[in-house]
Amino acid sequence: MEHSRTRRGTTRGNGRAGSHPFLGKRIVVFTAHPDDEGIAAGTMYENHRAGGETFLICATYGEKGKSHLAKPVSDAALKRIRKAELLAAAKVLKVDEVRFLGLPDAGVKAHSAALFEKAMRAVMRIGPEYILSFGPDGMSGHLDHITVGKAARRIAKRLRIPLAAFTRADAGALSDERRKFFLARRKFGKYARTMPEYRKGDIKVHIDPAVKRRALRRHVSQFGPGDPFARLPKKVAAQFMGSEHFIRENI
Ligand SMILES: [Zn+2]
Image (cartoon, rainbow, N blue to C red; front, side):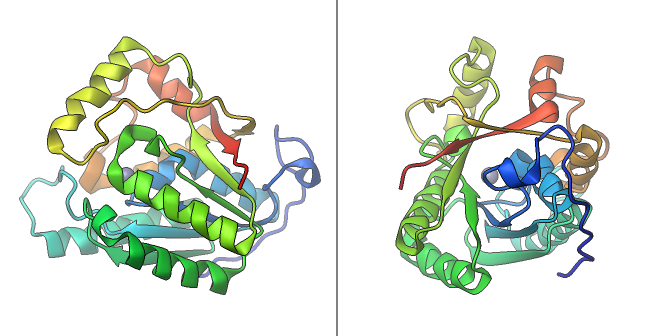
């Protein structure tokens, strides 16, 4: 999908675009599911504002996620719905192109060879200057996330492209509440058995919370209608809305 590419030159609150490791560049954001892009949503928009180009690669259509739609829908229908929702969110974030790899949701690990091949082809075609993706924690410990992060690392290494991993604003100080939240999700069997160990980021991007909120509201089938952050504790919501954090990876 193509969007107009306005060059605005400067970034607000992120220093000069030239001094930032990836803002203002041609970047790939590599995720597993529609809505994962929320982790770097504000960053993608800031990249556009800094004159960069963003290519979002999403491994699955997210058809196995719980639906918040009023009526139950088939996996096939949910695929179409989530694809459209991600494209709508990407439009808000001024993403230049979205590429779906079409792997099975919650089954990426079993298809890691196909994931690597498809993603490698996509990245080679795009020719990015930087890749952003999951680190070993997979943010939530989701196995699809961890598998995507491993593929991103292999590709970055092979093509010698700098890589940064997503991390959390509160890395190193995860509350008991958040730990319980993560552990409660383990019962679905899609998550790593150990608690994710979050590393502290060394790249911070100040973001526009209004744009991020507007983009994430496009994922109605995942969050239901209304503000997706309204259900989160205020402190947690604030962490997602003010800035996004990344770790420069040595590859
Ligand atoms: Zn996900």
